[in-house]
Image 1 (cartoon, rainbow, N blue to C red):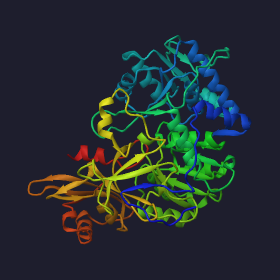
Image 2: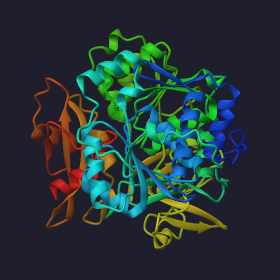
Image 3: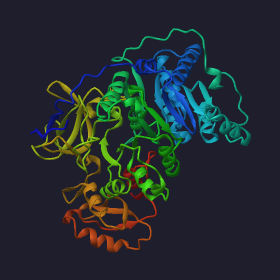
Image 4: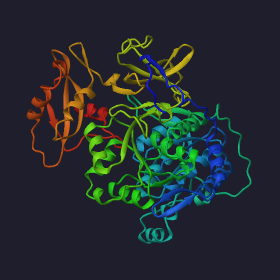
Length: 558
């Protein structure tokens, strides 16, 4: 399946046999096709309760009818402000059945963040759940924005009967002083059996999802992902599986569905193949280990900090992980020591992949079986092409054999940013009549078609005219046995302009000091890569999905 080849290391298209034809489907159509193959097949396992494909499809269909009855038209925006709960899937596909564009919102958003993105997207309906913190923030946004309707699901009603009853008795899922009506309604009240006519959708033309980026600079931007981008990326991921009938797969659903990685690699991937998801509301190492064992999970997409957390948990050695075929790490670079230790301790293959919001989730991944290369982000998924652009002049290709800015062409690439047509000139470049998405990531391509991310262009540190990649310095300091996590940023320096500074957390019971780490590190890197300090911290900032957040650290320090 993976063959040796000679490639031009500035431009590349993955060769056959990965080349394949993927259907351009709407997501409701993809869901319907899978559901009709086996309506009773399990789709979602949630805290002891199992939902079939028919269960979720029927809920989605009734939600679509309820939206249409309240006046939602094709192209209107419906927002999801939800953790990993079953109605996420019902609302996601149901909103699209009604012709609406889904907008994902992180449950961790503050009122201000949520209100801004609701306003920017023009969201009319927002779906949340009766967890006080979520409902409370959503209700405040309803009061101060153009949001028209807040739909509230009951967590207790999603649980098995005994757990749901206990939750109701303890009143943990109840929210007080709610004026139920047209502005705030229950999820159950919006489930309609009315015989409404669903709008006709065009996979190539109609938008399915607005997925907001983290906002590298300024306000976050809504990536416009159509039905074709999402359905084809799900099929691209499915084509990687070498293990036979995908309907027997059970994925560990610890990644948050609102994030593009989980949205494609978990939710849409499962729907494309008929697999099931053993989901948890949020990542908790103990609960994840219990869930893997109980439901015999076969695959686990996660981020590096999740795998580190499993290694740190005392129950890891007591958990039966024999069902797991592969774990897939994305979202952030996987530290080499974590990679090696996880495989040694668990015996489970851990592979790295790569994607971004603007590519509907996945661009490349290491093989699940056969040849793979640690430290790389693997090979391109089928149908994807790349070029490596000159780091200083993106109108040119990088010199042969040298790193360059990764730019992507493929069926999964977004259509642009919501209400920001002017950004097209910044993020897209045209070569040979094809439009490529500039990623901002600096990459190298080897002769076997394996990609390595060297760093981000905006993260490069300019030391007296020399460019320093923070990840190169981080890779070195992570080799020290006492270092658990590391981030390197540039700080102002009068003579050289900038100088690298390392921030680290330590393994338990380590007593090494910052000066000793600085001396150890600077003996192993180039002169311009030497740090001025190694700062030891209890913790480093992380994003909402748990990856180390260089942007937040830079903002805090500078």
